[in-house]
Length: 180
Image 1 (tube, helix red, strand yellow):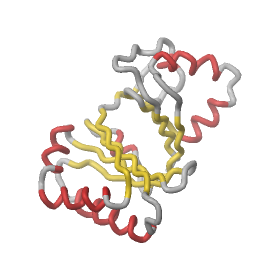
Image 2: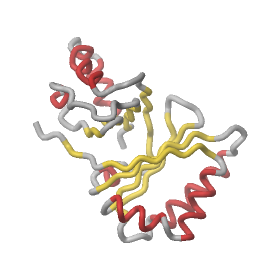
Image 3: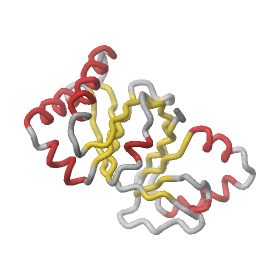
Image 4: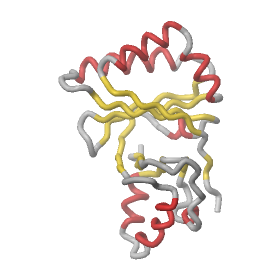
């Protein structure tokens, strides 16, 4: 499975589409504030002498610095990314959180959510770049489908269990593949 690059940055309230950025990589998936593509593609692209000029239009959408995270997911994240709606959850572990405790809570989340018919996939991974930083990718039929599931008591308990050990930052997005 490829490592996924997740580029986090504060975005302007109504960012303009950075002209020319769509041509950087065929399989770039993008949304307001996040860009995702494979680690291998990123490393290959970064060696290109024109790379600085290619990414400079992206700054039109940024209102602050970037934070690049390389994440190895426990299963193929493209199933979640290819869903009609994707939830990306950034977890920053609180001090003294035991990994065994985190793993147990994430397993409970996956085991429960994967049974939901409107959920396409769940993938979990730790950042290669920041200890204590984890990501969850979940694919849904729609953002509303996720909200409906999240309103149920058993899922609220799972959410509370994660908030107890981590700062949790979820984002709902609809990714569109650039086709040229």
